[in-house]
Image (cartoon, rainbow, N blue to C red; front, side):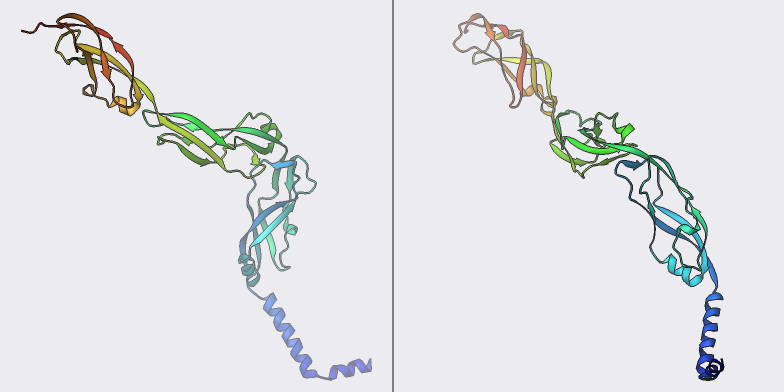
Length: 305
């Protein structure tokens, strides 16, 4: 006892300085101004069974209201914080994750005053995997005079994973809508699959390509009153006009003028008198004659005067 008391008498100055520093530190920490802040903690869900899928909307982060020494609160506010929820062993159904103050590993002097949402609610459903054909979703029509000649999707099937009750009913997977309004030729478009409000995911990432062949429509047009000419000898014709029906590309045929057609009968080496002659029509390149009425006409060649 005497030795211990004697030791207190040694190095009195150093011991007094240590005491003063300890008291100062206590006052610095304990007396530091306190503040409050709302921290955003990124939410990470781990160890979910591959046979389950979360079907409700889960927030990407949770908000935690805290109070504590200003220095600590400022440090936490400047840090990327993550809250991990371990879903190992969770079964299908409704699952609640309580988020009380003890759920977070904050410094001892930081007090949690509020957590949103709390509890975190998860709805889990069993999943299945299926391979389904892809169906392109076309909207609108090509410009006037054009039509879709063929369409091909690459790949034509995909393997998807989804909630069993939803996926079992599907016969195909649609693409996002493809607008045809401004397409007037062959084109390859990249698109995505339209999962709508279903809980589906691709088993493997895939780039969806749609090959569209869009061409001008082939139409028919009937033109009446086409003048017939007798060549090389002049003749009086009855009737003197024909009706012509042509087939060809939309733009070429709709813009065709009657003056571009030449209807003739051949009077070469014919003697004066009455004749029945076959009408011949010269059709512009790219068009096809599909109808002619009448095909034969009466012609009268006069005697030379």
